[in-house]
Amino acid sequence: MTLRQLARLCFLKIKMTITNFKNLAKNPLRQKALLIAEAGYKAIEISRVIHQKIKLKENQLVIILASINGSKKLKLNLNDYPRIFLIGIGKGSALACATLAKILGKKLTGGIALDIQKPKLEIRNLKLEILAGTHPLPSQKNVNATQKIIKLAKRLNKDDLLITFICGGGSALACASKTELKASQTIFKELTKKGADIIELNTVRKHLSELKGGNLAKLAYPATVISLIVSDVPGNDLSMVASGPTVFDKTTKKDAIRILKEYNFQFPISNFQLLETPKDRKFFNKVKNILFLSNQEPVLAMAKKAEELGFKPKIYSLKIQGEAKKSLLPLMEAIKKNEAILAAGETTVTLDNRPTGRGGRNMEAVLGALTKSLNSKFYILNSNLVMSFASDGRDNTEAAGAIGDILTLKKAQKLKLNFQEFLNKHNSFSFFKKTGDLIFAKQKTFNVSDLVVVLKE
Image (cartoon, rainbow, N blue to C red; front, top):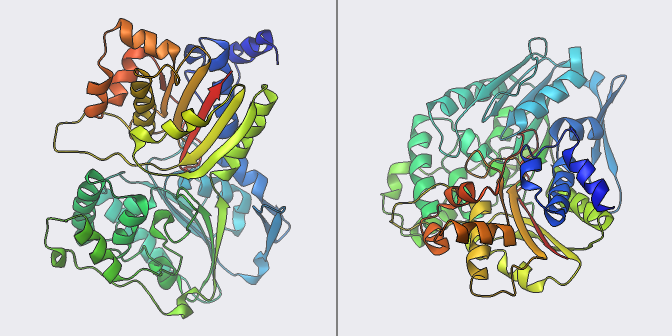
């Protein structure tokens, strides 16, 4: 693709997910990076993915399952079920349920979706109630919505079909009681501040809940349950996505206690009424948990686009973890000329007791890379670029992430910004707002973890 073609793509009024594409695309390398990111976003666009993967042919619902060796299909004869219900839990689940409700039409009996916001679409005739809760900290709104989901699940009988969309963010959104609400708020604040990863955090949250850790499957028993799971968890452990409402839980109450003790949790554990998750396998006999989408799809799409743009793509990892500010350094050290290194995962930001600013994992990752670059020209030159962004368009703020390159360094130095000070205060949003390198994106995509692009021309 020529530079002229690139420029034309960037400045034409086309439907970009990145809303400030034009402002960020200040040179050809940035244009290419943003086009690669757009390819990733397109691969996880909610309505598009649902229509691609779910078809209704007469009375048969066909669900295409992702597979490394090719696509497989799950076929359901809807005539076998007098009543069909939908439940959505997590970020993106409302639009996913609404899209599927349109496909099912009159065959749908009813449903509820709990998301962080209501999508802008017509739902009056969809027999679907969409509720909005708070994230990352739950609130009474979440409790009220979760109780409605529990009530629906308890209505089901052995002849019913329940289809669920389980998405990232569901651990915070699904909160069944005031007791769980208080415990979840406290535990989230304390464990994230101390650097606990998503597996540790969700292990504890499962054992506070009447819905998570397989409890939704228990509530829906003996109905048939098809659970379409959109993974935001490194390694795609389905029992950890939204704390696994429909998946048999192998962890125990003892595991939750062990994690709390390992992080020197300062509050009496007994106050939180830790619960054991359902261990009777009968509750899961009619449950089929399906990995519906993961970060593999956007990363493969980004690799294809990178190759089209003249780079040699390399997938570094689909499960990057660890401290955010250090997470991009191995990728930057590994990259060679004319390569695009791509990755995905979920890092952590360990907070101390000092006052902190605004930011998210992705912005902190890019700021950490830039800060390291001040002492090593090996990392950021005219031909290098790093970018990290949230797949659902929100990196703990209204921004999706950030882009960093020589232009960022020059602008920051011109403004006399203290890189290390912003990093120490976890104030990455303010840093990139000043340099003009925040990425903003429409919230119409699934949450499948964070996505990373590192380029070198």
